[in-house]
Amino acid sequence: MRRHWILGLLSIIVAINGSAFTRQFATASAPNPPPGPDRFTVVTVEYQAFEWQLATWKAQKSLCTLIIDHEGAPLPEEIFRDCGETIYEKWIIQPPCIAQNKRTCAGYYVFPTDHYMEEKEVPLELEPASAWISLEDCEPVASTFTNICESQPTLVITGQEPLTDESIIRIEGTYDGESFDCNETDTCKFHIPETGEDGVPVEFWSYSTYGDSSVVYSAQVRVRKMDEGDPDQLYWYVDVLSPQWQGQSVATCADSWAVFPPVGGPPEWLATPKQSEELSSDIPYTYLATNLILQGAVNASACADGGLLPGDVGVNQCGLEKSRPAVIEWQNQFDELILNTAQETAIPARLLKNLFARESQFWPGIYQGALDVGLGQLTEDGADTTLFWNDSFYEQFCPMVFPEDACGDGYMHLDEEQQVELRRALVRSVNATCEDCPLGFDLTQANFSVAVFAHTMIANCEQAGQVIRNYTNETPGDIASYEDLWKFTLVNYNAGGGCLAEGITHALGEGLDLTWENVSPFLTGACSGAIDYVNDISK
Image (cartoon, rainbow, N blue to C red; front, side, top):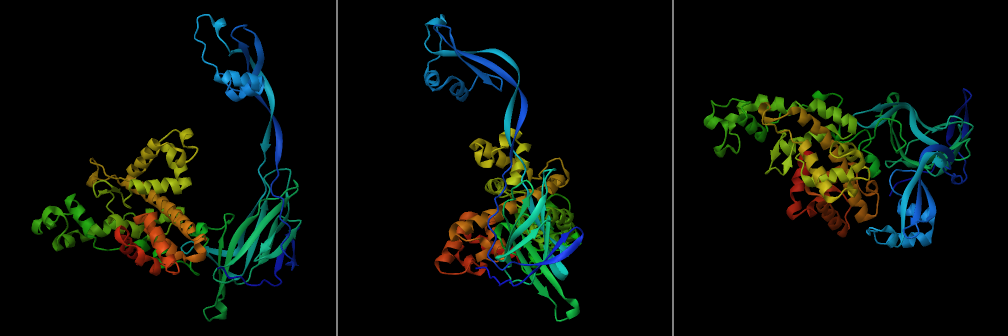
């Protein structure tokens, strides 16, 4: 349940003609709902018209004329439109005429008679007005996905009119249930006070000289004042969740889940540092060491059995020591790319690095009989999740495999063979194995795969959120914390949505809150491996 505070009189600073004045919030109820966009016009376009006649086989008599705007024979609906229901119902069920003497056939046939340029009127929906939300005089902090304001923060709502002959004339909305109204301006500014941990709801819209309005947009705004005991160090953390937000990207999936990260930024494992050097690690990965020795990147010939355990199934202590410099260098070679990908997708950089460490120890090949592939060990099931739950990624990837017109209706509308082909293409795209490359890997392909795994994680957080909605009928952010939602996402990534649903339903059945501590004990049987998986990545 979100906490709300009562908003008293709140000053709105509205810029008009270069000056500013202060308005007070109305104490009445929220304004009447805006009309919304209502923009249609009719345009005249020129097109190639094709004229056809429909005639009877027996009498060779033309009964009607069809005018169509495409090459090829008229479509059934065009026969109905231009020739009427009676002729259409006979024509649509008549058998084909195969007799040598066509006059012996019953029914009708069509034939082309002319083509010429013509004009027609086409209804056109015009782009509507919109409104956007931002902050003024606040500094975004990329590593924590929050904003720091050194003075009381100012919320800015700006209307936008796409039509050149029209303009925005008013901004209206509600802030925590109280109305605001900024007349004769396209920008509304007001100071916002401190809120609770869950923030407050905001709705806003713009009016245009066209005579309509934008749709009603929503946001959740959180303001937390920090002084750390020193009045000279007073500042505010400000976070905004809204599809109309114009500041830096919020933490990925926070908007979808409708949940704020912890005040001041997320925990370390969900953070993105400013410099790639801060991602550096020196963990003595045994699987990585084994493969570096097997591929000849490390010379462990001075060690017993060449530094490997019997059967080459692992590395012995001597081989691990010999390979340590190469292991450290290898595990950090992707850090710059991980950081860049995190900044582009808002998937936390440390989460990505921890994921690769757990899944492959940064060895970007094939594992477990070619079922798990790449730095993040993608499977066909994982590829299915990515393509189904991440629409924007699907729209980018599908045209790389199929003609663009085959991709237009979305992954769900591909036939089964196409879905299989697309999933396998995605798995191949993260497989850096290359027989003719140094160490057996194409590192360019490995680098490409980093972004694929980031988009795969976005898909999993979307699916995890939907699982929670399905079983609770609640918004994820209303019943689980930001950190726990990421842990549920990792369950979804590692064990699947079925395991996540099982843990959630059992916890709910026991009347427990949806925390990781409450849900994880119910991950049993085939799902139990997700517990160590999540704890390892989030440590």
